[in-house]
Image 1 (cartoon, rainbow, N blue to C red):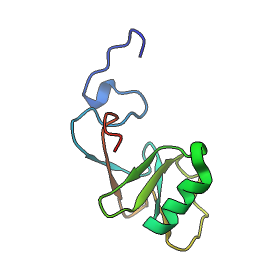
Image 2 (image 1 turned 45 degrees about the vertical axis):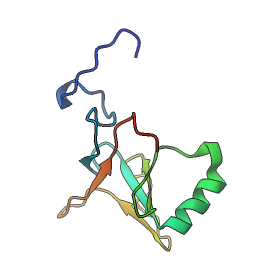
Image 3 (image 1 turned 30 degrees about the horizontal axis):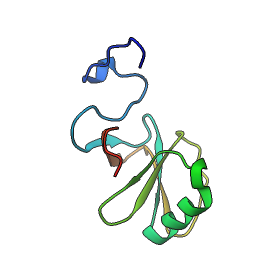
Image 4 (image 1 turned 180 degrees about the vertical axis):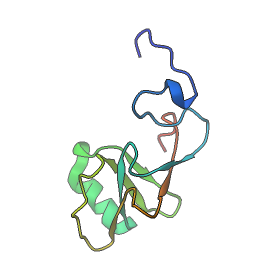
Length: 104
């Protein structure tokens, strides 16, 4: 970021940036982004089909893949082995998001 000072507290972050911490941070779905959770086989196939057109993807230690997408953009989706994680009226969902320095 040219000339900008980025601080590690939430008040100084841009609308949404990955956590500045050195480890995974649990962040609420539906605030800055929604997430599409796909089973490993479905997610791997989606990555093959999307290629370079894929957005930010997080893979957990079990192989499940999570795409970060615009809030509300998948509200009507109904796909097998795929779940949309978002903010609900009576429930919060958190996703473990790694810092930008973690790419594997």
